[in-house]
Length: 131
Image (tube, rainbow, N blue to C red; front, top):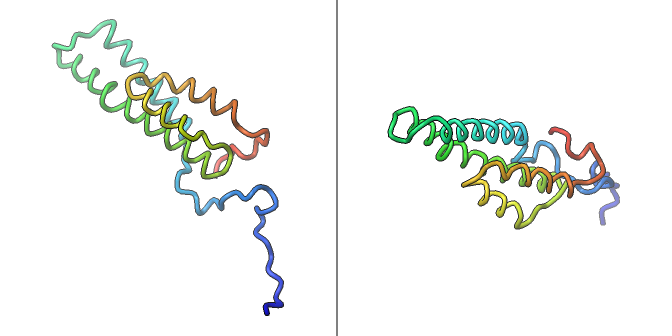
């Protein structure tokens, strides 16, 4: 029989959140997502308005927004959603995959993801703070 009193973890009474050292998905995902989507939008507009794919610059810009920035936006959406779920703030479930697949051809769908994320978040503002 164990007669020693064991203390409860400090976060147990506040909602069973994971320890910051155990988090795998922490990062500046919203800042990275905003920078990626903003850059993608600028390059896409530049490509659409001024460049032709036959030129080297047109091919480079098309490659950058299509094959580099669009997958990066998809990855940051997934990592932000996984970070929120890991901190037990909000779990987007299957929606994180829908947003990620929609972001592959059109990264500005991240604005809809952000609105959904803010709508579902808890009222406790400290939960969305950094690590």
